[in-house]
Image (tube, rainbow, N blue to C red; front, side):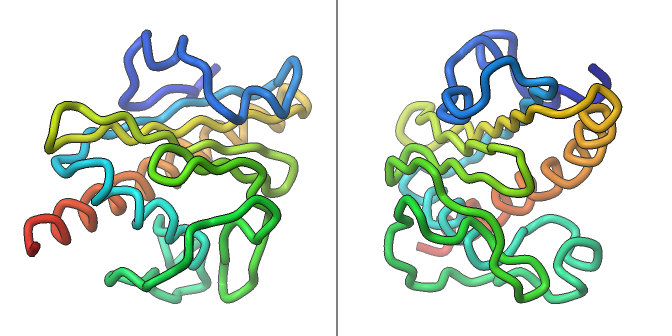
Length: 168
């Protein structure tokens, strides 16, 4: 499908993601990934902070409100709490979490997993997968739109985690 991959290897696509267990026979499967020059423990707080804001193009999906550029001392995410916030409105639900390793949520019929894979001591692969049962045309539209938005989100999380880690 158009827009179903960005920044991921074939082996990263073949791996199992927590979101896979929530949708049987998805019409949409899309993977994104980025390498972060910081350990997973420095990346995780930024992933967990998507509960506050989308971290993609704020002028589009956050009604112009800037996603926080500093870490907020949040408790670890828990299953059942809100997954994210857009324009000040809390949306979706966290459906699975393994602190420091993965965060999976559901929003608007889609299930999304953020997975952190340590790459030695000072690097992390931040992987993202979205799955959804929908029509083929909706899946195509979501895949292309998600490619743009998720790519920006992962690059922002990478930048923030690397910057924060370098300051420590």
